[in-house]
Length: 446
Image 1 (cartoon, one colour):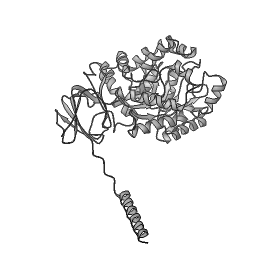
Image 2 (cartoon, rainbow, N blue to C red):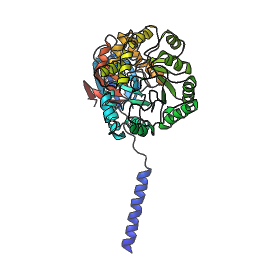
Image 3 (cartoon, one colour):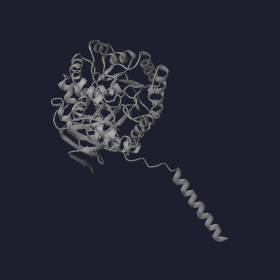
Image 4 (tube, helix red, strand yellow):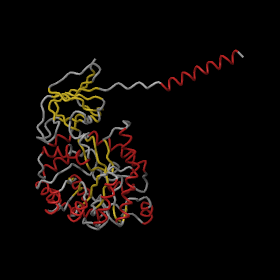
């Protein structure tokens, strides 16, 4: 009896201890404080850079920006970038993280690879993108649940990668750029069974938008025109009717989503702008009327010049099917001239590469192509920071280095406004206060 009473008492004591432990508040993790000493600070791209400066980062946010080099407080970290040029993390408004940039290899492997393979490809590409200095990306066409899972895992801190703003799948009409194409009838039937992004008619296009939203899409993308990458000999002109485009835009607005349109042909560009999109991707055949519509409205132009370079090189190597290769050569003749004209005409530009058409991690090569097309270097840097943040609707969080914003910060050797190719080699990457890449010194202050 005594042993039973002792046992019961012990059990009660253990239970009480477990209950007390469960109810006790968890100890808050120590706030991480980092002092970044910058030799030059381009805190607001488009404006003049500051000289010697110190950025104080607390809990993933920018807490202070001080003039001169300031030493850290006890328990903080000091990152010595006194010989570097520091600026906000870059933003790429057009990527496809699950695409390899190797079209022939991907097409041959399509029947043997599965979502799990794509997941690991996405993880690798996300890391490459972050290490290249891009702390935020807009993924404009990936399997919905997969890109959402990657977004959330990166956001939790369990994987290195940029902040992802996903579109899920691109909404397309039957037979258009974004539909299943180029496979045998067995594979086509299998792939089409999973396609919830293809629509015909306004009502059906509303359904397709809602499906992408249900998958977690934060932005909606639709194919207003044909595309170079699809194996359809349908050209690059408009592929949607006015009511279909308007239905897509209106439905997206009901859910609080912004909308972008893939559009090469001038007719597709103008129809999408008329429907009320927030941005146009590619714009190969943009003309003066479309330029006027851009300038009288608020939409951004995302030229993706690196993608044009990639598809032409792939076509010349025989890595694209005939229909796709023919469109690549067609675009090569005219795109650079038209985009240059749009840039020089003062159209608002946001940075995007279409990485995934080409390989990931070389996103910054887009800067030189933009400058060569006539965009001033300072505006090129602004397009990947201030402008991109505005297009995302996230100017309060990213795009500049200001108090209260996310600590998304990079550094390069030399002035990137004087030479935009400096951005192709990034020495330091911080995303939301976590250092992911460091070439230099980091010291813990006692």
